[in-house]
Amino acid sequence: MVILVTGSSGFAGEILMQKLAKNGVKVFGLDMKPGRLTDIVHDISNPIVIDHDIDTIIHLAARLEHDRCTTKEYFDSNVKGTENLLKLAQKNNSFFIYVSTTAIYGSPKSPINENTKIAPSGDYASSKYDGEKVCEKFKNDNLKISIVRPSVLIGKKRLGIYKIIFKNLFNNLPIPLLGNGNNKISFVNIEDFTDFLMYLSNKKINNLTVNFGGKIPGTLNSVIEELRKFSSSKSTTLHVPIKLIPILTFFSKLKLIPVTPWQLSVMHKDYYYNNDLLNTVGFTYSHEPMDALKEMLSYYKDHHT
Image (cartoon, rainbow, N blue to C red; front, side):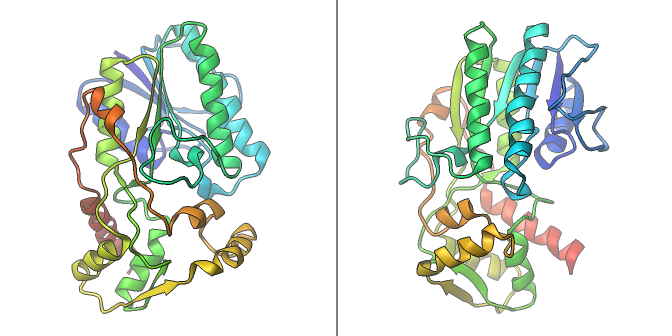
């Protein structure tokens, strides 16, 4: 079996590449940026030619929400780039796994399932959903495709907006939480997510569109409390009134704060998933999100304090 992983220099891509290689799979990595596991440096917005027979393409590469790109940059990478990879899959008759995002749902009521109304907010979510539409066109041409919509991916080395929380914990400063903190948000441990991508590549489940929402570690208040104990921090929690969301969104659009408008729209609400469809394909989560959060906190301590 030969697998091509796009986004191989990224957070999920590197972990997936290592797991596949450890399992004896011949794997090639493609990314627009060089990386220690990237074999092919290429901008996927341009046509792709690879001189290998490829059994499966796992398409992780994307311009992400926090990249704050232009509309054209999101389109070129997430839509045009996906189409170019689908053409490569068609040429090789490869099984294609498209990694989308649950951000395409906007900020709906929980629990979220695959039938929840699609309401993308912003260019990132819109471009990822447009990528799904391109996949559907190729499905009609008999290409075998699975679409996975992951929620918030967490794990060591991926700090993102959590860096603010970790920094404040180690400096005994208040931890800002939008709203009362009693909302529940599910997180995806990166180990579960990469395990599922490997599971799909083995099973080659065709015509599947599934959420990958992860587990709920508790309320945001309880998550912060556990991290506070783990780090022996004296930080308190600063609850930011939700009436300030319009002002914060204004600052976010000006890129004056490290939180995106979509994140502001969901981080004070319940945001979790119904996993019934995932369970029917034979996969269950086996890694705790709290363990990943603690790994992230330890990594921050070792590298940023």
